[in-house]
Length: 287
Image 1 (tube, rainbow, N blue to C red):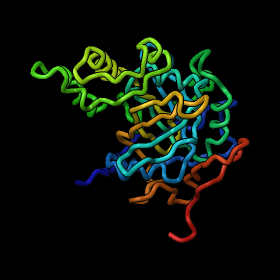
Image 2: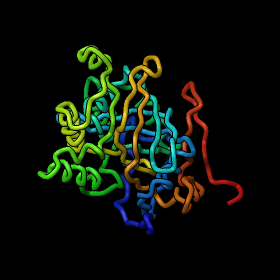
Image 3: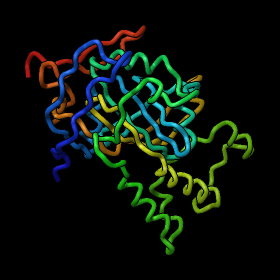
Image 4: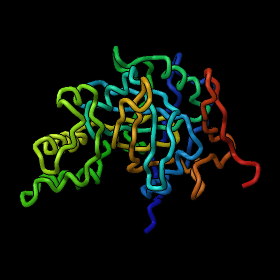
């Protein structure tokens, strides 16, 4: 089954005015968008270790975005691992709901200054998208909000009167926080079908209430959801297991099986070197 489809999209707006205007004149993308749903191809979007902008839109709170580069594919099925500092405001937002949805937007060197500004600002005191005047859109540069077909299927299973626990098999597992362990008296394992399982199932299905917002000027949008968060594996950081659901890539950066620029001037992919320095993945000399 062909899981890559060509889609026409709305063209991105020009660079924002004032301080947010990129120093480099970014070319307007006149091409299409490649829609990717197959796990092995989703995983390849992270093979180059690109700098990503992780955005989350929890219900009842302003959306937020942070820069991240500590992430890597864990298999060829779209699963990946990332590490987030527990002090990050975004970390608190994705930990509020099991199965929380978020978006990874991949910038190019044209958005280097924006990446640095996002990394220096906090969303704890307001809407970072508005504060930094970041153009945003639904994933895939579409007009309508993204909805998960997988979540809809899980919700229908959860509402089945014949088996109220049917959804449990499809839900993500979650490592208890220290507070949860303390309140329960132990790291007790819960039996299938217990009241705790039902409560956690309802919370996980409620993750679909999360909105999705992407950074419009980026060349790739990946919709993901949290499967597991380990609080004590790495000091001061969450170790997050997440799953990519689907992605949209500008056709200037998809070569059939690889995620890389294929047209000169379309924008090099950033990889973080530390100390606010970046490496660039450009068009290979030999294609």
